[in-house]
Image: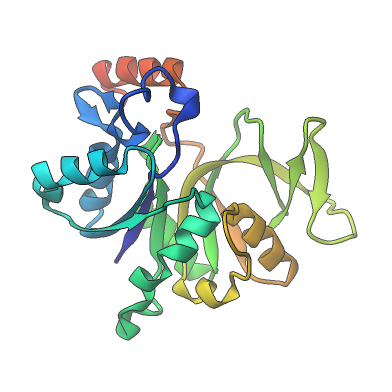
Length: 249
């Protein structure tokens, strides 16, 4: 099984921690976010990973080389211009399509700036059982960007704009809608790549919403019982440090 780590962002919200390094190399408990994410994937048995880079890209490459890639087979996808989550994934499509024998094998897409104990094995199993195109780990918690799911946990819209207006993929409003927060961890089937028609830099969520409107299975997996933290702000990194010291992680 393969995975992609999204690590190209500027880490603007993490300043001043990212003034002299990429967010992937910010540390918690003496380990970088990149090492922690690679370790989580390796625990699950994934040793074939592609990482997109942009901000302080050479620092990431040198760091991996210095640490022998942490025992993982790694490819680097350099972005001269930031491509966001969708564009970054599309640029790395070759990595998931190069082996025709693994075309039916899903892969994991993981933000480098989230830390969690979400069971990746459970996610993959759920993904296969639902025969999904993409499975998103979601939780009931406060966020500025909610995704909307129907009673069967199929993606059906989002809350958009500063006024959080409901935007549905179908014109008829859904009756039993759940507004849930996305965790930044996906399981995706490689057959999605020919369906991604967007170009340049774009959010993969835009592709998901369009594909859900076309009837594709974009589903959510409730992961409320697991630890999860977004490390996009210095105060969140500080809290994760405390959690690490208190053996919450």
